[in-house]
Length: 149
Image 1: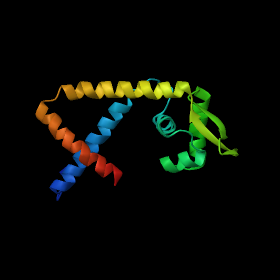
Image 2 (image 1 turned 180 degrees about the vertical axis):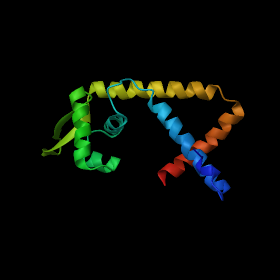
Image 3 (image 1 turned 30 degrees about the vertical axis):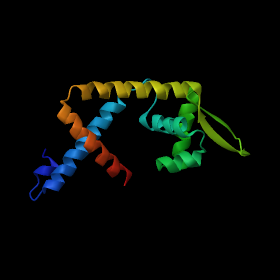
Image 4 (image 1 turned 90 degrees about the vertical axis):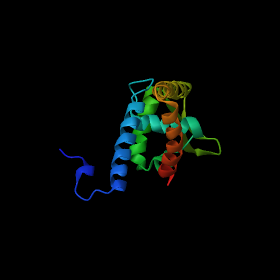
């Protein structure tokens, strides 16, 4: 099996693209492995972090934020509710609307997962040289700009 960059005519920017994509994907996967509960999927955790960070959302708002269809988000929310990480309530401004919000258990899960993920990454960063950390500091800004574009 060959690497995409091994193809004839692969330019330096193509090689950078491939290496960056692979590196970011592997790092993301490794960081996601650090979580406080094994009974929650990455999709469920992402929805829960939105509720933790931004407060109550309707299913439609969560669907839009995660770029999924409402039935998919509804299944995700059902799992969070069944696990006790989220709850459905009436919207304070319109009792006819239902919003989803994180429970105390859900907020604690997000807090502990973030702590574990930060601890793992800090441990890896401490193993780097000061020069490598400086390079990553600059690269992190660029990677964030790419992600936000």
